[in-house]
Amino acid sequence: RCILNMAHHCPWINNCVGFNNYRYFCLFMLYLALCCLFVVFVFFNGFIETISFRRKSHYTFAERQCVSLCWIIALCIFIALCLLGGFHTYLILTNQTTIEFHGGLSNKHRARRRGQLYRNPYDLGRRRNFQQVFGP
Image (cartoon, rainbow, N blue to C red; front, side):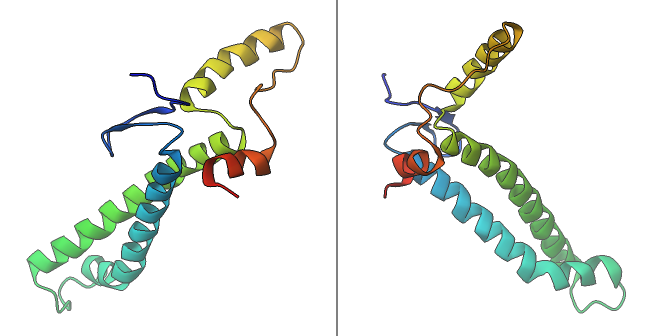
């Protein structure tokens, strides 16, 4: 199936990410990262209590495990989303898809060997690239 401006197939949303839904994919990552950050902040004191004061904790063993596991998972997902979100922010600001990014790497290397500077032909400038994805 032909998808306009296809970036990649995302297993999280079980769909191809392209022109029509790239904005929603980026917003999904942002909202998920904010939710994980919320869990990390809310559970922080409980997490510190569960790992530092095991004997004096008012939590049962099962509750301590649940709090610790939730905090660690939320932190790991938040870190992964920051890395992935940072990469997609770069792609948005340079008006590239992930497929074009990987193709552009080989074009950059070829241009560098020839002593030239490679520039993405679809790059309209940061502001217009951002508006192309998220609107005015």
